[in-house]
Image (cartoon, rainbow, N blue to C red; front, side, top):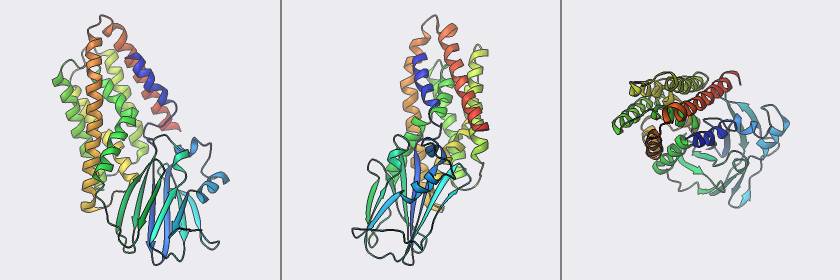
Length: 337
């Protein structure tokens, strides 16, 4: 158990808890013109030792992607404009303008994601003249996509959002450590089911409310509270012989964790009205699949360790201390940096 937690903690010092390597790129076709918005987390560029105002960052913007129309590379004319600006939520946006767009077959090659975070995912959206989103694609690997403007159809994207939800929980180390801290004192399947169920209900509520634009809470408040939830449960493991009502703690803090999950869908942009339903349901289902898989793998190990005489005196305290330290690290990072 200690080795497993140390394995997780090595990631804590190198990546942001919510930085699963997600960026977005939006192609807006209107009146023979093309506007391209590509948005990245500042943390991705911090890894490249770049700041928001550096000349290198603007150079990256110029070479963020390559677009071909009917096999010909589309180049921004000198009269066209590109901008680099902050979106106000720890994101950096590149904005490119292209004039006199004509043709049918369009190929885009996104050049930055391979040099950013591991397992990077870029969400490509395509919008037509009337503002209707006509396609959403999840780019991985070669980060290339080809489409025809004349017969493009909008996919449902259920499987893609399901995968994104699984990836988000499995690479969301703060969420996993919160669940681990709760499950360290679980004795029965009933207790486990209660924790998972109420955590699921809670984060599903806030995830849905944010995605439907019913409530909004800045990440600057959400992320520190998620770190505090980890610290709280870790300390409770240390100072309470038999922690009770873990389902209530899972529910209360699950509401906050749901706001953290929602930040992913907000960054992507999942549409409005009924368009929200498929991405919301499939992403949430992916989160549940990921956390249940995590619990099913972890619990047999915990229950075997509980049989050891040293579990309560050494293993549980050591694991809880490491979890508290991880929470403290995230809290300091999210408040002061």
